[in-house]
Image 1 (tube, rainbow, N blue to C red):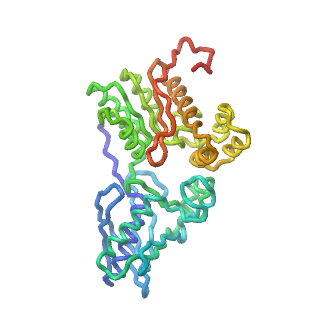
Image 2 (spheres, one colour; image 1 turned 180 degrees about the vertical axis):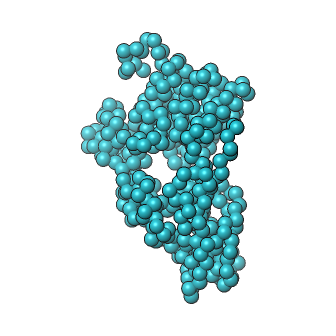
Image 3 (cartoon, rainbow, N blue to C red; image 1 turned 120 degrees about the horizontal axis):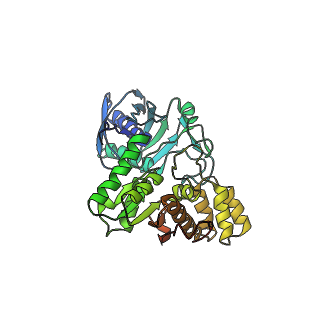
Length: 373
């Protein structure tokens, strides 16, 4: 692309882990820590400047300022602060302080009442502390992560609607923030499809992010690496470009959240107002014979993930296959051609939950018959 390359940044999780590591080193060495080297969840090593570095008896407080790169992130400039006390117990106790949200609703993959610190950042924080403790007389620590001004930042997010109250979430699966620029991201999606075609590839695997791409590669090991294209929220762009480049087959791989939006006909899944339509999911449930009480529970669910939990708990996981069928149908309609489309839904560990393979809609014969499948 001729456009200037956008600068990557770091997640709140990566910054929290770095701050916790710095505080641990401060307690062990009793010397100011001006910068701290840390390992991100994606195994990249990064050196972070340390802003706050204070010792208060047996407690150390260190902070790292989040640099979101060229991403227009509301947490850019946030001060991720770790308050650490070392213990002899072999465990890391993680708490949320001021500016970190508390989980008040189910369906987020975190326990109600816990701080909104996602699993990957939790693991990264623990690993960085344990790395510092190696060879010392301590085996564990109590850690409190806080974000001054986090409550204000949270007003620019959907946290409150999701039941995350009192601040921001500590997030990140790789530690890296990819710049979210509409023009640049769309251009990269188009370029990736064009490159695949240039190399003689006729199957595009469109994934919604890094994790779903990894899972897709595990599911489809025989395909060339160039087939796999992270479209993020730009599923519509990926499909239209695949049509333009005469791709034979498009395979969509994602988790229930993004796929539910596609089932609702949304082809730009980051778009304002495109929150998951649980009413639609409840209607899908009814259409495949799921009992009314469960359908009502689905409609009242907090997130798409919560819907999945409800269906799993009651033995109705086959809703995933129906969602995949509707996604394939909607994407075929968006393509406007007889492009072959498949859709795979995976869970948060990469396990295949549902699929619809080789859907192709004869555009001429289905006019006036929107329910044709």
